[in-house]
Image (tube, rainbow, N blue to C red; front, side, top):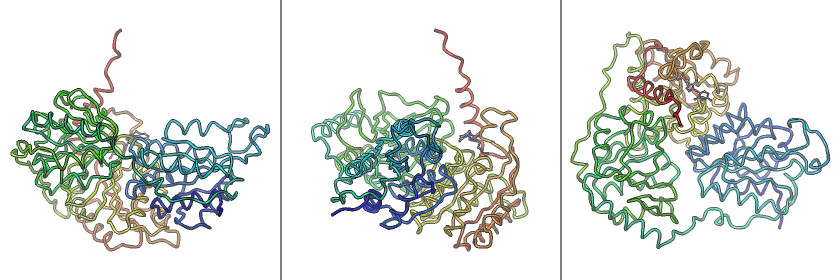
Length: 558
Ligand SMILES: Cc1ncc(Cn2nnc(CCOP(=O)(O)OP(=O)(O)O)c2C)c(N)n1
């Protein structure tokens, strides 16, 4: 029984749970795209460019567990690399598939279009090795199944992107048909001795302490066990905090929840709670410069247990040989009760008073009205910028989710990512907060939201410039050309669209726009929120000055 290389790939993508794949056509991938259409396991979704294609796949992978994208060689794949970098940094398994030159051209001395103008076609795969967990260049149809399975299996296990290169003359070449997909989906069993040793050392850490706090980090997105965390909290009876990049990873209506720990820009009481605890059990944290507010929010190593996706470090020992899912599942069944930290009451987030309807729109009023829109079935995507700080200060109902990109932080990510998330989870409400600066990088993907009739509610935060950069370090380079953002929708609709573009300059106009957005279920609603440039969150100002100081550290004199 045989199939073709492209249909083998298509079958596998459907078997691992994808319902869509993203693509931009190019002459090196057209036959491959045909094979995917013929096999039909996943719907082919088109993007305006390969960078947006990658961001959409990354956003889809966050909601769906994995994603795939098909681009053409060199001019397509190199454009997608920024998005694959995001998938790598944010632990999202995106399968990047690139069409490639005909196998007969290798070693022929032929110069090919779209290449660097020499006869070495291997540079793309070499570049991809640095930002993927597996890179497979297919040269024979017979070996293609093994290579495709290896790339997908590795991506799923490592929670990282993988790269597959398919020559244009092999996409419809016959190859062996696939065996059971279980060989791609099975997780390696835990090493019993290592897991037991880690749990025993964890017990010694916890029994020696009373005021222990759980701190949830953004790598937990890749763990697949966020729904297990309340059970662990209930078992231990301790307080739970989340890092900013993990906002929404623990239900905020759970009695143990105590807010976002982000150093001096934490939720009220969270910094004192975490830094005053005699033990912090960290799950999947990323302590980078932004998360530590310029290396100022650091925990005492001797009082920190660090549980990462494939290892646990505690009491000066490191344990591997199991996944964080296996570790947390076992811990939730045997951890000692450590309720001291939960005796400290939760401090509420400062309430934002409702502005009069005719008042000039402010950042606070915008955040208040967006927060009111977020319900238990909402996914809120927050772009790099003051949108991070607006998202972090919101009160989330249980079930609400927040997607951000605080490790990679590539502006423009959020617009295509919100499209991907909306495709992956059509039963949820999708709300996007994106600044004017970021929006200008990937704005055209709103046209694809119109095309695919995705009712994403977009809050375009027009504070007239790169305000996050202004707060870090100002200069003429932070001021951008203003657009008629609401007016863009008319261009994107182009006779056949259901997009809606609205502009809000007062509290009342915003309230009315949100009501219209709720009713617009056949396409995106872009609400341009016009703010004064000086109007941003206090936390952004405080955080920006500290990050600027960290960037400005003088070189060490040796
Ligand atoms: C691809 C990429 N290029 C440049 C940067 C640096 N950067 N980070 N944030 C910004 C400005 C963001 O401005 P907006 O989206 O308007 O956000 P806010 O004004 O802060 O609400 C830049 C220019 C970046 N983070 N990513």
